[in-house]
Amino acid sequence: MTVMAFDEALGRFEPVLGLETHVELGTASKMFCGCKTTFGAAPNTQVCPTCLAFPGALPVANEAAIESTIRIGLALNCSIAEWCRFARKNYFYPDMPKNYQISQYDEPLCFDGYLDVEVDGETVRVEIERVHLEEDTGKSTHVGGATGRIQGADYSIVDYNRAGIPLVEIVTKPIPGTDRMAPEVAKAYATELREIMRALGVSDVRMEEGSMRCDVNVSLMPRGSSEWGTRTETKNVNSLRSVERAVRSEIERQAHILAEGGKIIQETRHFHEDTGTTTPGRSKEEAQDYRYFPEPDLVPIAPDAAWVARLKAELPELPLVKRKRLQAEWGVSDLDMQAMHNADAIDLVEATVAAGAPAADARKWWMGELARRANESATTLADLPITPADIARVTELVASGSLNDKLARQVLEGVLAGEGTPDAVVAARGLEIVNDEGELSAIIDEVLAGNADVADKIRSGKIAAVGALVGGVMKASRGKADAGRARQLILEKLGVSE
Image (tube, rainbow, N blue to C red; front, side, top):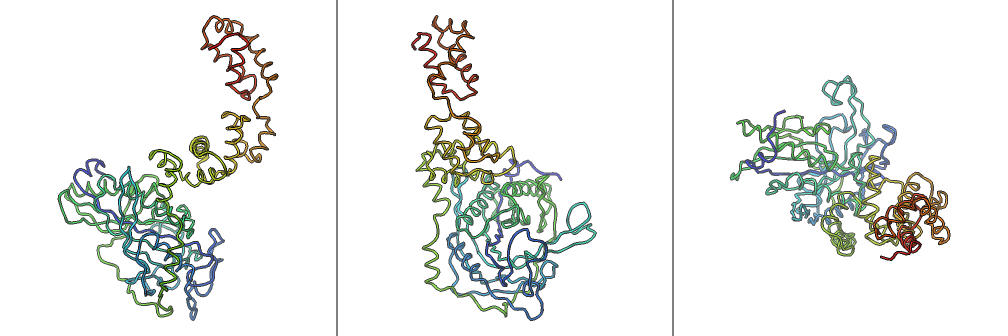
């Protein structure tokens, strides 16, 4: 696929973004029936006559899902409808047993909101068109063929466990004016949205499991033009990095086509993780007629104003506000705070501080040694088998002089290996610093005896050579000596003062 270089593309065209984000709610039961929503259950074991659309089975709306949706809308500064209703979205596809989806059409539960995101020190306001509630579809698996898609497959199988799980769709208004920051703005928006869902506790937003997924809309218009271009919709992008890459890829692809005098086709596209590019899905040149009509089996939703006011008053501190507060409390730079945010380390650092560690030490360990180990094991910081309380205890042992940083890293290694608490690892591995003056003095005597030439250099005024002797002490003590105290004792024994 021929593309135009990103910088050249942005020199000639201006991008307009739009994002449609689906979030599976973490309710105990499905949207319109009592089936469980546990992820990873055996196929078709969490189904019933209602979510399988047996004749005569009737839906009943999940109050917890409605409440969660209102809370999402409030967190996104939306207006909450005083009255709305569900609709039937009709289409044939095997992952919906009813051949229609219960959704919302022209009467969303939440509308006209916004979300502010920060990119490179600038605040970008993303306007929200609507937040509506619907049911998720089942999961189709296409067997055979090279792509895993229905084209070329030998046959398909369907798991209906996911069919009927409460699904919130958050739709932005078109986002112009992002210019060269367009990919970063898209990623920042998806990231902030995910953080809000976590703060609200309405979803685990595990993109790798499909509980949050984004459809990315991109169009280009020539610089100086006021007429927006034809958009494409890249479907079901399932990682934050891929949201950014999908925007970048579409800008480069569309710019090349337009520069060559071609026409952008309004279509859905698929994003490929391995190449970072998109390929065509289905054409949307003509609007799809879903034949929406009001769902006759469900009563309208009319949220009580007092209920909505209570939900608004009970909203937790939202992520952007929290980050600014913690940044001021911890005294860290914008760059350091952004690094912690990118690494999903802010909550871990906060919990470590709450467990008694100084903020600087908590940040040092999570963003240093533990980030390195997470990268090595291809996991996230939150999934490492170590707790903020463990890190707080390690910082306490270092502060008390029981450990130095080198020994502390060995303690962390032991905790990560499942050897127990930091104190248990220290005891089992014999890692505590040598604080006994007699023992340390004996080690120094051995090192001096074996390095008489270095000792003579120090006596003659070459004090910098003491570093070699300190290194010898650290080696002899297996890193358990206090390097600063060892230096003092060496100079004292040699009768040298600094």
